[in-house]
Amino acid sequence: MKTLLTGADGLLGSNVVRELIRQGFNVRVLVERGRNTGTLDGLDIEKVEGNILDKTSLAEAVSGCDFIIHAAASTSIWPPQSEIIRKVNIEGTRNLVEAAIENKVKRIVHVGTANSFGAGTKENPGDESSPFSAGKYKLDYIDSKYKVQQILLNEYKSSKTEIVIVNPTFMLGPFDSKPSSGQFLLALYQKQVPGYTKGGRNFLYVKDAAVAVVNALTKGRPGECYILAGTNLTYKEFNEVLEKTFGIKPPKIRFPKPVIITYGGLSEFSGKVFGFEPKVSRAVAKISNDLHFYNAKKAVDELDLPQTPIETAVKDAIDWFKKMKYIN
Image 1 (cartoon, rainbow, N blue to C red):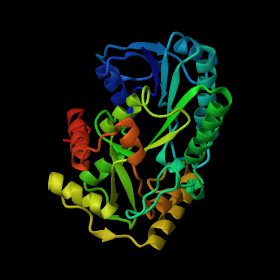
Image 2: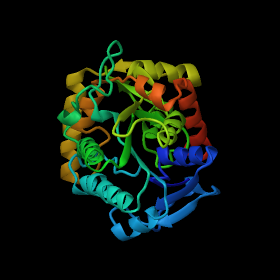
Image 3: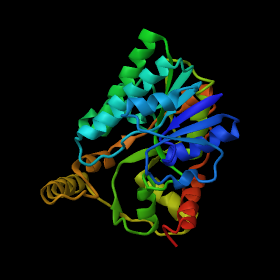
Image 4: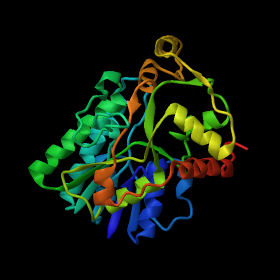
């Protein structure tokens, strides 16, 4: 079965392509012309150049494919509102679905985000029945991913094209070439973070996510969403994992919510005035004080999502950063 993968050189995509190969799929990847795709070097895959905003190149990429995994997206959170983020995430996905229908693709697996569902506490984590609540952060990345999820679910109802949506939480692991989520881990590892907030999030081993994404090609129910989640930890608890795994001293100061919100607001104002991306915007400050905990039961039961210990995820991520000489 030939499978087209978009976003193949990202953190998740780089692991998905390897899982596709491991499971015996014939893999084609869509890559932007001139883009550095070093994480794909040496793999037995077919590369085609194109862009999800270019319908002509997209039609050529989809032609002859049985399945599509759509992992390409703009995940930028700065600036908070951006036309290009909305265009890539919404219009680009619409283009891909249109090409899939025209070419009679059997199934589309779309990579969304767990933020499209309400989060919860450790005692009552969010699941696929929890209503969207992250609109309060006013980030086009989050809002556009939620909107496109609704578009896809409606598309399934109207056209009956098989669409399965997977919603990963915060992923860590190897092949984070940008780095993306790994920036958080690197900063802690290099002792560049002076403190922590009262919030927390769900941490997911990216290789576990890749297994579930590929399994969704043949498992799972069309028209359904699956939260891909791992371990729910407060930031203090995550810091303790790093201390236990690497022997590094974690930050001990907990920043009060008003302090970090004020700092985020001032940083965002400065960024807009002087034209730079702040390390902590107002939205990031708000997010850091909330609990983003999720339940993976549905994905575990129906997509065989593995539940690897978080220690493995952080160790593999740091080992990869060392191999690539991001750190010593």
